[in-house]
Length: 495
Ligand SMILES: Cc1cc2nc3c(=O)[nH]c(=O)nc-3n(C[C@H](O)[C@H](O)[C@H](O)COP(=O)(O)O)c2cc1C
Ligand code: SF4
Image 1 (tube, helix red, strand yellow):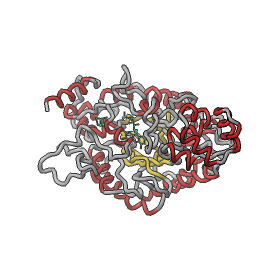
Image 2 (tube, rainbow, N blue to C red; image 1 turned 90 degrees about the horizontal axis):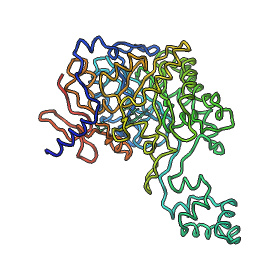
Image 3 (tube, rainbow, N blue to C red; image 1 turned 30 degrees about the horizontal axis):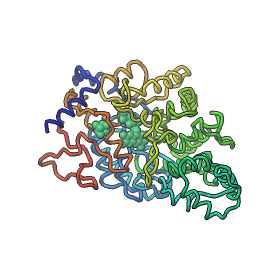
Image 4 (cartoon, rainbow, N blue to C red; image 1 turned 120 degrees about the vertical axis):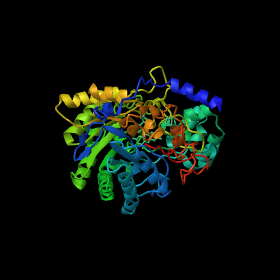
């Protein structure tokens, strides 16, 4: 027990010190707790909870009681805006990821809307993040890959003949080639396979937006605007106040924006072309939902990968989004597949394991600077360019924010218009309310060591190490994780 306390104290010592939390009056007069408008939506405060996937939907993507309770719990802390997790816009199997790809999902999503409205007393504005992603497969077993998945063509035969120094491989029976590769060492495999096949062998097959030889990839610009527009309409029907188009991290739309996108059909190459589909998606969404709800996006201030888009690109994208009429721009960083760690056999690559991933969800362990306000300069640079060009589009910053002073300083210095906190809010969903009530000293602070992110990586129900084993007498029914050991929502706090 004592050891546990020592560990906690050590972890707390690594956080930004808080000299004192504001009084109720100071909080009330603060910038963070002042109102802001996102297009048609008025939010009471500039506090914001960004999307976090908690892995609580059914295998068919439906809202469960645990999903509703997860958002109800966040709403009890009354953030200005709460963004529902990345929600799939297609009607295809996607595991326990929430979906909005068909009208049958509307009813469940409406339950989240109602729960949030009730628990926040109507004070929290509820947005939903809309995502499209491409296929990714698990890392295969060696035998399976070479016997079943690898396609054997002339180029492969030639390389095998060259590497093994025997011309006969050029027209050897396919089965023999496959068996030769099953028995080959890694150095030989590396020389024989094409770069793409080698990646599929080592990491698992992953589709890219540049695979235009595949009809469904070539046609993405034809189908995505309609899919996003239909999803946004369903969000409207369910009663959400806004949609956040997911143009960030490792997913389809971010891949169109990426400098690695070299499609030659007018949707890749120069950044004017890379932004074409994201703008067409926005136009389709806007046409469908009009000004009923806020329409914004989350995009990357920097991809943090070799050859990827940088802040310079992001500023250009931000200006074009503002010009198009986006109601808000939420800035994130990294989170890409390109530098992800090799997964174990049987597991899929996870885009938050490489450097770009660490920049996306920075921890206290990563370097001297740590996570604190780490990604704010990206939002600040984008916002400065917008303001200089005369746009008033609100910019939202996130990344390692867990104190009132950080948020105030970001707003006072004009680095962002709203300040978001993901993990700190997961750790203590009541922290916004505690600050507003002048009870900041009661805040349970996030350690920024990413226990939650490890659960996300394993596609296990996401919880926080600081509360998932805390149980209180008389608190009533407690929803438990499938492992039976962890509670699924933070314990109650009595204001
Ligand atoms: C468990 C977990 C799930 C996340 N899921 C999403 C997501 O669905 N969409 C998204 O844009 N970001 C997602 N993120 C990233 C966060 O929104 C946020 O950008 C990141 O954690 C950095 O902010 P923080 O330091 O306040 O946590 C997730 C983060 C965590 C910890
Ligand atoms: S589990 Fe996540 S939210 Fe909880 S303290 Fe650790 S990093 Fe913060």
